[in-house]
Image (cartoon, rainbow, N blue to C red; front, side, top):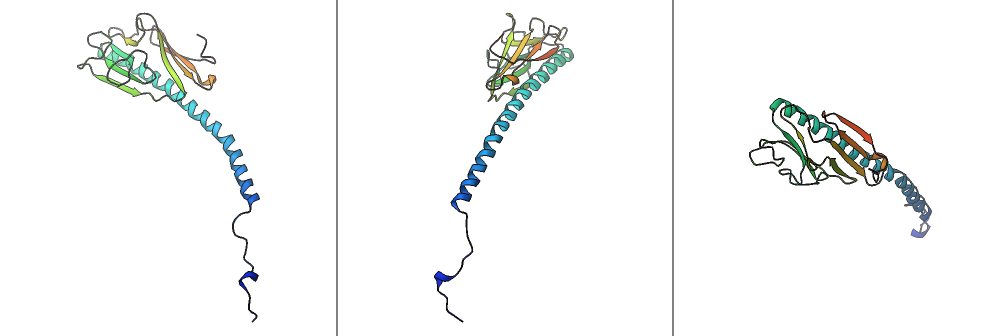
Length: 185
């Protein structure tokens, strides 16, 4: 048996060549560049849909609670989910029974629901009339948002097609409207 030197042994190729590594990286970059915008759009669409669904459910609950309790029910913006704060709709929403009709939650007034907003891709604001610019009040005598007509406006920061208004009528009915351009009123 002839002796073989270590340098003459044939070792199978191990690893990848530089060309194979570069091709693999290029392919991954191409796939990622296609997938990332799609994922980003889906996340933003999900936020837009969630905002509309949350608002719709809270408005329906407010009307139902005003009717069943025969008390004023207030929906307002809230940062701490305990008290109303002006124009903080993007931070959170607070729904409570307003026994003394001051449109501010007092310690004896029960919270019916609260929702922490975590808007990463857009902004939310309430565009109400002059008498109720920071809250929506469903009246205890008829469960209508008397004096609280207006609209919620969600504006997506990147895709105008995901922006929308949710209009609240004097009868408490809701109507969504797509807003392709948030800069216009």
